[in-house]
Every structure is written in C-alpha cells, then in structure tokens.
Length: 162
Image (tube, rainbow, N blue to C red; front, top):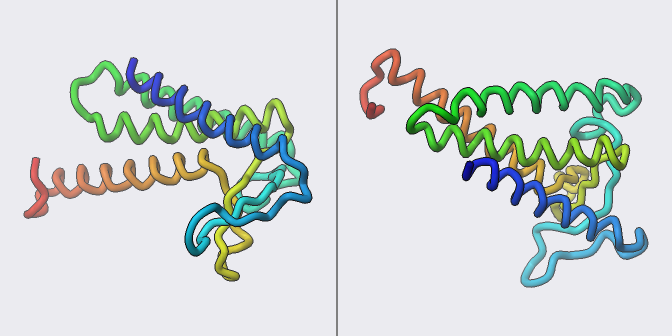
C-alpha cells in the first residue's frame, strides 16, 4: 500500500508543478531558478511528442505507446508486491509509474506534456523536462543497477554479496 501512496504523492507533486507553470503567462519564461548561480532554468514547453519531440506527428503512437508501457510496469509491480523483500525494485517501479502517470495525464487531458526545467549550459539548453521525467530516469537507473547486480550474483562474480 505504501508504494501506491508514493506513486500518488509524486504524481500529484509533478501535476501541481505543471499546473503552476501553465497558469503563468508565456512571456514570463524562461526564468532563472532562485538562489546562487543558476544551473536550471524554468521554461514552459508543450511537448506534443515523446522525449525530444520524437514522433510528434504520430499522435496515436505518442498517446497509446506510453499507456501500454505504463500498464506493463504496473503489471510488473503488481506481481512483485506480494513477494517479500525487493524493496529497492518496488520503489524504482513506483518511481517509473509516478512519472509515467503524470505524463500520461498530460497526454490524455491536455494533448501535450508540460515540461518546465532546462539546463543553462548552451550544450544542454535544448533539453526540457519535468519532475515526472526525473522520476522515470531515476527509477530506470535503479532498476538497471538492480538487474545488473542480480545478474552478477547469478553468474557468481566475486564481490557481489547475496
């Protein structure tokens, strides 16, 4: 049950941020984040495609492809929840579901995903993302590391504890 609450809270946090950004006039962006030397900028970007605008013209693929992936991740978490342990993997799946859920909400109810963070360095300024994207990235990094460790244990690599 804790994992479902985590998903709901993280999804709500991102949706609140997106609503706040959407509520501000376009002319107020981009703006620097408060405090110190800015690394992040606040931007308002309406992404009608997948990450980096990929498949922007294929509306149905952009809408239903992520829905299919979200369903598969939810199925994986649902099968894993009754098992003891594996808390790291369960938390990582919850992160992926929270980020995916927030972006799916946008796709179905707004017709686009609201992205609002960007980096200030010139080489990275074209990347615009939201908290949901960060949740997905963090969850996938943790899942990948978990699978790597599990694989190393399976083949008996020394230094990887059981």
